[in-house]
Figure 1 (cartoon, rainbow, N blue to C red):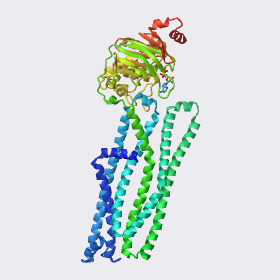
Figure 2 (tube, rainbow, N blue to C red):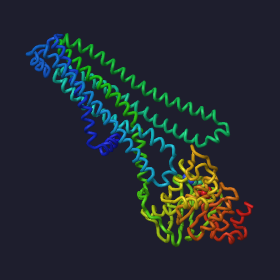
Figure 3 (tube, rainbow, N blue to C red):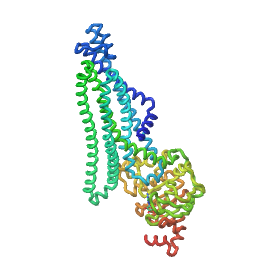
Figure 4 (cartoon, protein in one colour):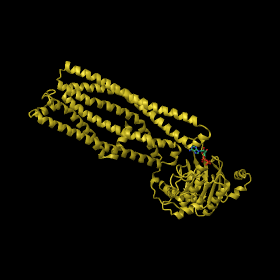
Length: 592
Ligand code: ADP
């Protein structure tokens, strides 16, 4: 319940007065509907189906007053009243539906934006612990369930208030019989708590199954080439079939549960109405017109009980989604990098360099340190190369230098000072990063480049592309800079993508350029070009290059050799290359 309350409060904060307007609208519609049904009784009495006693509250006096005049006058009057009520109700209903959907869609949009924003604000270490597909799952399916659940709880609330009013009215008309209907209803509500419990457990299954579904398809689509080239289609298809089966079984289970609870309500209703009519005639000796009223009341009240019950089952089913979303928001706010959403920070200049002092880093949940006692300095405007075997900790070190993860011990100092949360935005906007897995958005090359520098001119873009030796590639594309690239656009090779990403990094003229295995997908010719480009850049910006191919870093001012998370050698390229029995020398020899 507390989970739902959190979201009701959010909805209240989001919708404000509209929410009350909406709830009042829901009640008004119910009220007008009841009135129009009650009007049938004086109508029947007027046309002589039966005689309405003056003793019946509310309706008796109306009919009495009307009976003073002639039927020719009364019938149209009551029919006009009836018509007016029905039209009024239809009009209210129309407006309420529109307002309801506006609030609901507005709220889901609000939740989406809030959740997405809190995801973007989370630290990199948060993403290291998580599966990406879980975010897709939460932002689509779970979020929709939460929004629907919030609205269901509002509807239930309005239904309960409205039913209470109707019960009061019915009580006024006939206390003993209303009590009997109520007692029957309450007994059923108590007995059907089991349905709510089951609905919640079905809801938990729904969350788990849809999560596996999202994770599975994301994973398999990412690995589709491996699936096809290793002919694994059949086994994955089998996995998918079985998951789909479980999903549909789960939904059928829920509908079965709802059908069963509806059946109980209907059966109880039939039994009760039989008992009522019997008791009314034989025990309470109620008159026909009063009995008519009771049947009308019963007919109005009972479906309300049924709909409250079935809405509650649906709500119980969506509760696990509320918990998933709350957990995610909590985790995100614990891992928040508050300043990162401020886009206006001016890039930072790096004047002296970056120093790492006795850095230790261990990935969450791991038992060993990935980096141990790293003390290095990266001088400004020079080129530092980090080499070492795969898994040595090169990327982790770069992540620490970029401030994406925080060391367990030790410090990263930029120009001698530890960066505050506010500095981090300025620092990151002064970094140009090219990873081993170059990422371009599915849009034009121009937009991809302008992401880092929206005001970049064509000339600046072309010069960045020339610099990363991607100029020829882009010129050869059908629409040049405006060619759409990515999944549904023009396919580029790994090396071509890498060069465009490099151009993007350079376009920003970053104070710190980091190439993390960025040249690994390039052929020797293009690698040479990049190497020359880096040579030109030397002295204008601080460069850190992680390179698998040692030829890339021939011009580095200093080389850092990492092994098992420790710096084993540190010095100039030539110095290390000639060091007897040195690790770097061995690495060089292996590549010859
Ligand atoms: P390199 O860049 O030198 O290949 P990495 O810095 O990527 O090495 O990884 C160093 C070590 O840290 C490896 O043993 C790797 O298994 C481990 N590692 C990398 N990322 C994670 C992670 N997200 N969680 C746990 N361990 C990790």
